[in-house]
Length: 340
Image (cartoon, rainbow, N blue to C red; front, side, top):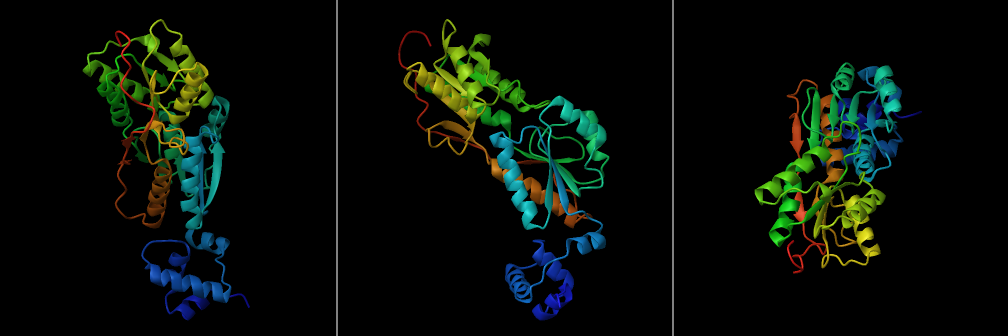
């Protein structure tokens, strides 16, 4: 006969509810007891019944995840880490990739996640109408992008502070012609490019450096875009001696363009990125490190906590993760060659 949860509980000397919490990774069970229950369940060949648990709890044990670009490094990393947390807790992920305006409009018009998920992790920034649609689902909501918004738990970073540390680093090295590769054509309603650009402008102003619009170029948050943007910056009458790229992928594209133009980094041009991409250390890129995977994992944990403890005090509207400037080999003082 197939072992039941009652059989496991009896053999382990605990209650059936404790067995359920332990096997689904829920809080309130010590690691020692959890390990004991897991061993007993394996010995008896017990497998939790998803349908029975759903009937008992009224849950689907599925989390909806909406992303603007599943193929982009940032979103893929957040998604992977969040999925690991959900999977360990016994939840499946229902993924919606809303990469085009048409797909996005169709999703928010039809809301196919209704009654199919217990919570939603949004990796895109919904406008007011879209936010209201998600709130109408009546499930916990979380995101890892953008600022605070009603009904959502936001896990993210301080984009302005991160950018200020990067650009100030270049200013302190002595650079005065500081370009920026932005991502202004990024995902719809994405505020990150705006916040980082404002911080870039603020540091220039504080340093008494006049802003030159010719020193800004759009890199589309891709390696190819970064290479194209760096090529544009090199073509201006007075090219920059340093460049801040709003993402490491764009910074890597900039490095490729500089190499193609036979310019040395950092002797001829300094480059700073943002993210601490897994390849940033490989290319020696100075960058602002943000815990991308940790943001996805934390957002997932907060959603599960709201499902497990619905009567508990709701989490903070915004959870800020730590960032830091990582100095590597792509930045140095400008070489003397006339006014910078």
